[in-house]
Image 1 (spheres, rainbow, N blue to C red):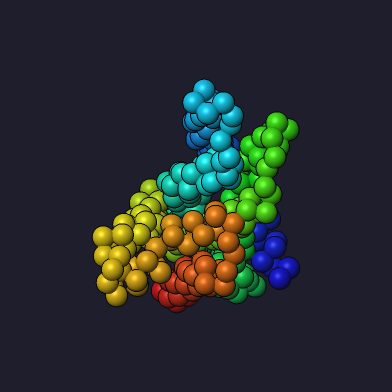
Image 2 (image 1 turned 90 degrees about the vertical axis):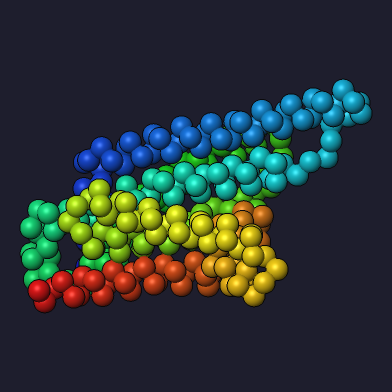
Length: 256
């Protein structure tokens, strides 16, 4: 465990001395704030119309009308920017010819993979933590249900694990960071397209399979405030799959 944390610390330093983490944070926060404030504007407009028509404000689930669409839209933005967070993890090592040094170090391949993954996941968790100002700010003017928010953030964290493990796998395949980002994006968009396929074949057995494989459907359950073993198993299984594939690729390259 000590070796994993040491490597993760080294990778974190590389993130913070390069502009990538700061640029991603700025873009992500700007888009997230815009999405949230758009929903707030929609909610206030809806409430004003209802008050003029009925004389009182409608009873609306604040989480459903504000946070749920914000988090689902946020997940699409994360799909676009997460490959940029993982593209350098192995590709940069190969291009800089430091892979040999890493492979001949006392670290095992499992420790290398997990160390890089944990570093990227920490940056991702930090990005999510920066969005906590949205519910905190809203809680000063109205009641905010925190339990579904906790479930939502847990779902986003687990989804991030899938994104990052697949991105790590893509980075292990090439020494070109742009190619790694494109491969990662292609893998992730594939999970999104599975959800669209599930909607078109909803009444068939194939539709049920695609529905289970759909990433957005599992995330939506968390965003609704529901935490169940089916969704936990789905995200954890895909994360482990991505890490396993990365391990196999790195191991195969070790003996070349």
